[in-house]
Length: 142
Ligand code: RTP
Image (cartoon, rainbow, N blue to C red; front, side):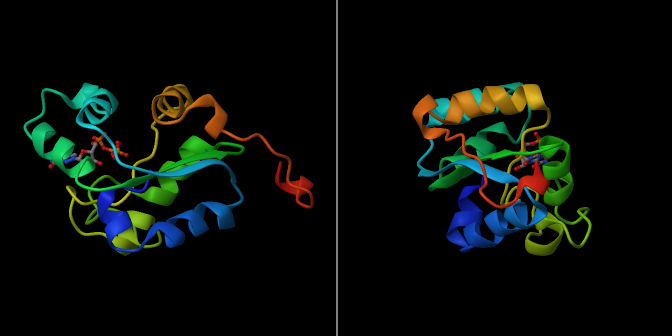
């Protein structure tokens, strides 16, 4: 998911491009204004943290871009492409390492396991918004 700061800064295309160039397949994409209830459900594991209220304000502060990506090892690879939670600790070459400086404005979210990925797709997308398709010319990517 591209978080509100990523959308405001015009980084949606750049972020999608990094996943496409790596070789993953986009199966869901939408611009979406997240409600407080959905934000709290998404981040329920962080409910006890001191930064939780600010995190909810941040995620609901403007539209996000929800993405579903498919491919071999996509969850672990996406986390590497995204980089460490704190952008100042994220390696150059990663999305956060190249494009962000604040932990509270780290421009992108990625699921932390395939199981959570499935849950989060169910939370953020309707079934009809996920499109299964076969690339016509890139059989070697699968
Ligand atoms: P995300 O869920 O957004 O991909 O981030 P993550 O796994 O890298 O990090 P997580 O620990 O799940 O934290 C979720 C988001 O909370 C914000 N955060 N702020 N100390 C702080 O102020 C702090 N720590 C975390 C970040 O936006 C982080 O991505």
